[in-house]
Amino acid sequence: MANKKSHNISSLGRSTWAAIALFMLGLAIIAGFYFEKNTRISAVEFSGHKYTTGESLQEALISPVGLLADSVNYTELYASLRELPYVEDVAVRMTYRGTLTIEIIERQPIGLLVGKPETYFDKAGIQLPAQMGEWVDVPIVYGFKSITPGDTLTGSEFNQVKDFLSIAIKDPFCWATISEVAWSKNEGVVALSSENGVKLLFGRNRFEEKVSHWKTFYQDVVTHKGINDFRTIDLRFRNQIVTDEL
Image (cartoon, rainbow, N blue to C red; front, side, top):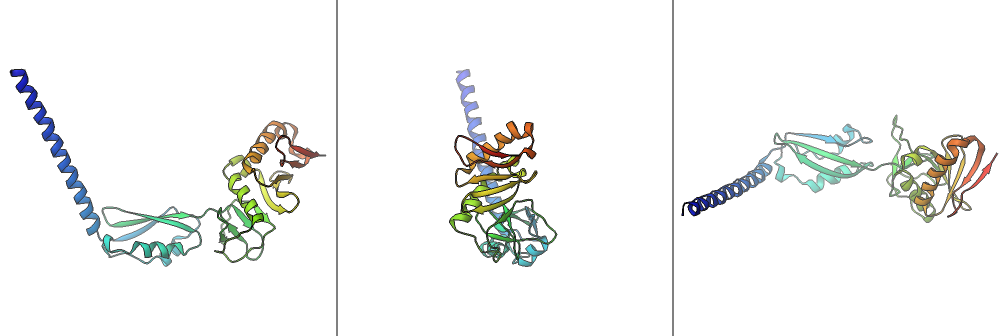
């Protein structure tokens, strides 16, 4: 009987502590909800931005300072910031002291169009203004007209170049070895190597495979033979790489 009684008391203790834990969790959730709804925003700060200045963010922002957190029109706040060319998306978080931190997710340039004005473009083809005094390390792209920043470049030929750059940027080696990119009706995507300006033919489609072949060829052949011996490296074929050598 003694053992049975001890077991019952122990079970009761565990049940009691579990109930207390659930009760405390419920209080924490309620307190957090109350805190969020009744926190007055005292300041705003930005994070995550590189191409967008803090000054332009402050100017575009519909300031929520002085408002209760649950009375802010966040849809309107987000929309005001997304009007800036490099701002793709926005997220917010708030500290218990009332500071609202706005995280800026920016569009990332993958190419620079020459012309007037010079414009960058991102993986969606959206044109982005060149920032004064700020140089982004992306290939120069020829064969397409620079238009108004904010507009979107389209067309099958541009999509080929865009797709190539979107894949190339994922490979640090490939990105570092390409300086200029152009479109050719006969040859498709054509690039110049950053070292010695060797012509690299990537053609159309299957760019992930071709980028991989370029990396392998460079490591296996170019590093031993030297880039100066090549005029053209043709990567358009599935089972071979054709070179034009000096």
